[in-house]
Length: 83
Length: 114
Image (cartoon, rainbow over all chains, first blue to last red; front, side, top):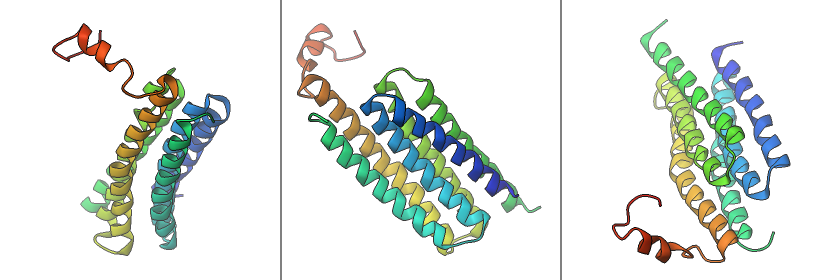
């Protein structure tokens, strides 16, 4: 297990904390947890791409970073009304 | 162990530490407006990890995309944080400008919180 895989494991464990906040806190806090979790998931995929030497994972990380931010924008827009 | 490997490892652990710190802040803070600050910290952590990959792999397919991912997260993450906070204010008050005039009248110079 190299250092990249260690960091990937730590970041994956942190995703559980984000999921817990999203599940048990208010809906506004869940949106913030979603944004942090998207950033964490992108970083995890980047680290896995380097640690496992699998280049397709870096495409997943780039796609996820864009889509997670767009999803967060859509949720924030919906949050203005009654949700 | 080359200098490039050492720098990449330091950047990797710095980025990972920032992201862990962001998650700790997300869990520990009580208010949503406090929690929203940690989105930017997590983005900067991702950028450091992208730079670590660039240092290790140089300007290659994986290095370029790693830095691009970090830059996307930092630039658009800040915009997302702004939109999120604005939406929360609209949800609370009906209009994001609500209360600003009263705040200005209390502090004419416009500086600081009252």
